[in-house]
Amino acid sequence: MRIGLVGTYDVDNFGDCLFPELYAHLLREALPEASFTLYSPRPKAARILSFDTVRALPARLDQSRQMTEDALILTGGETLGAGHSSGTYNFPRSVLSAYSRLWLAPLHAALTSNGRTRFIVHCVGARKMDPVTNQLAARALKGAVLCTFRDAFSQSWIRDGAGQFGVATDPMFLMDHIQTPDQWAKRRAALLPDGFEKRKGYLVAQLSLGYGGNALDDWCKSVAEIAQARGLDVVLLPICHFLEDEHYLGLARERLQALGVTPHLVGGRINVKDTLSVISGAVGYVGSSLHGAVAAVAFGMPLAVLGHTPDGKHEGTLNSVGIYGCTGTLPNQLPACFTHSETLDLAAVRARAQDQARADFARVLDALTGPLPDTEQKASLEAIDQLVRREQTARQGGASYEVKRFLLRMMQHSGLYSAYGKARARQRIARAAPRHAQRS
Image (cartoon, rainbow, N blue to C red; front, side, top):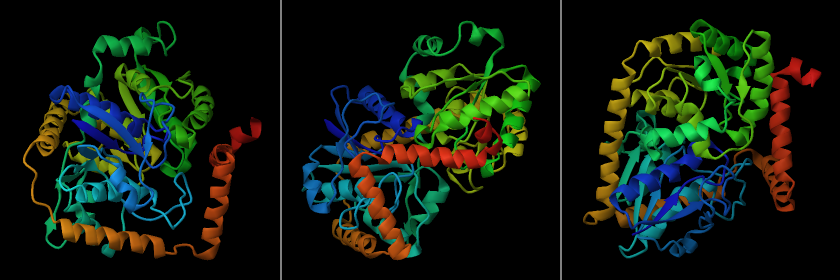
């Protein structure tokens, strides 16, 4: 069976780049002869990805016939949305936005394939959109052979009338199965100082710019409090590389040293399995990465998670497996979250999450190999057309915003955008950490 995996595998972000690793592992368990093609908005493999080749998703609906696989699977992440942006994916309004490429294009490919291709949406997150867009999205997704969301919040937004799609447990709770304990340990040993792991155990700490009001001092105080109360070392682990985690955590290292903690910073854009190996050997996890938190659950360790909002992806995903009280929106809430997580039966939580994830993934296998269900093809295609028209005629931000988008696209074509993006992120970090920015 030829399977196309669809996601943002062209961005150096831990969770996004681990999805194809995990899906290929789980699918090959049941379908040993399966072959995989990766699709992303841009034909570019992220540096931390294990796969060498990523194909570009169609820029227009009439190009979707190029996707000829037996099945196309949207593999997760916050990939269900609408509208153009000026950020990582900045495309002209005359073509599909990144969001439309991620789910409307493969859906259209399946609906116009005369039954040759199946489209599956598994455990994805949705953006908050306006009510009309939400309703059209729900109508379009009725053309998929299976559609599930990763949390109840996304499920509640994407609906058409009384009906709604199901919620599935994130298969990433099974990420510890990608390799054996010995393989994880071997990878980990190559990244940590000699004897570091055996000395007294370590806490993995990660933070991305934009979380917790950018209160880096408060975050460092909370990390130090958690580690020192338990006699742990600290490993600072970049996860969201496109947000310049390594640079931000470099500033955190200075602050932690002033607080009496001597952390080890894992540098470089390492492979996603290497990143996961470091988490696998930890005693606990404190961070803002959703899939860093999911990794902590997969390896059965205490955690404290910093999210943007109480109804965001962190809370929703953890709630889906019965974990409550382990997320906060302010750094000073993290010690209490971590302490609370230590009172949970983490082995039972892990077993429940993995059992649920296995059961929900079995639905994906059924959708791949079972009889082709009846889908609302005509209504779905009409909704897709309406969504594309709305996207191309929307004018958020006015003329100045479109000029900004145009100039940024020119920078992308000239090869300057990567340097600009890094400089802009570091400028934001400097504003968030002014004392250290002045000294460096």
